[in-house]
Length: 440
Image (cartoon, rainbow, N blue to C red):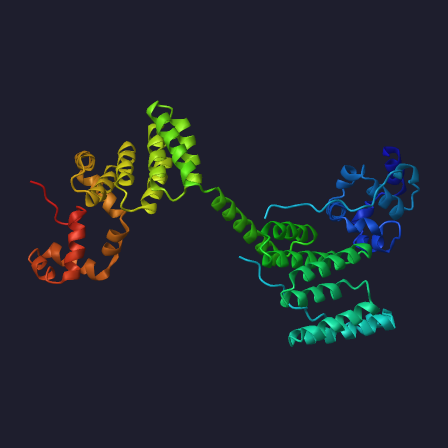
């Protein structure tokens, strides 16, 4: 085959695949046109059009050799033994309930020259299709079906007639019939080298029908098939949404609180033995089995803290608190984690919230005192300045004016404290150590 390629190279100094009319030339060739039904081969052609060096990479493909032979007029029959033109299996790509398929679109009226190239039967078929589209828009579905059927008798290879019929069946909620019509159109389209966009449209319509039938796996499979033909933006979005729904269904099917308790018990045992990575593994499995149990996140946070993975621990503490704001261990674990991170001000806040839940909690009391003792005024002040509420108060023009007056005339404080809103804001600034905090 390499010798044959050298012969082709001597015949012409240019890459034949760089021809802008390449697809038209292949489509017109009885010997080559069947290759265009394979999306993988079309992709190779596009790559060779854009990058001539790809020719050497794909020259081992017998179909590429056949194209070289035909396009350059070089006899490469010996190199083409065993060349195949059958389409490969559709490639699958990684992917809201899908919206119903759009109604048959108004197709542009053919120009005079294009109309002259049609047979009388094809002209009549197009006219019947237009009438069918009008009946569809008027929701006269039986009439639309009959008109499309008459058009098919005149133009049996017109794929759009089958997809339009499928759209009617979809609106009639006859989803199995919708799928069958699309399958017919795809089969006929493959046999007659129909535009790949028409094939993609039929495949997407099948996917929509499967969504309505509740078969999301088949819907995803056909959305992926459609995208392997043509990456239409709306189909990409629908495929991604189905992917999300399938993932959610799989997660829900995996939930089992009883098994979660078993994994939690195993995690507790490993934690007691100091085997924290093993404990994390069991707690993580327990979370997958019961993702709404706040205890599991709290326990895993304790493991991460032991391993000094403080950011992971903090994340689990926040999730725990979000799952159950009254679960005191979430705040205790968060406080311990923040203390280890030298974030004493934030740790004190976590312990303070724990005390709001249980004012007699000894661990919260001790943690709060330790955090407070380890915090100096400057640390508290810096932490306060990062508080969004404090930032809003300090950026308020009215409060800026009041603070300015208080600085010039301390007696003005009493007057401003008569206003409840101002008093609340001033108290926040005092508690934060920004205004008037003195320790004796």
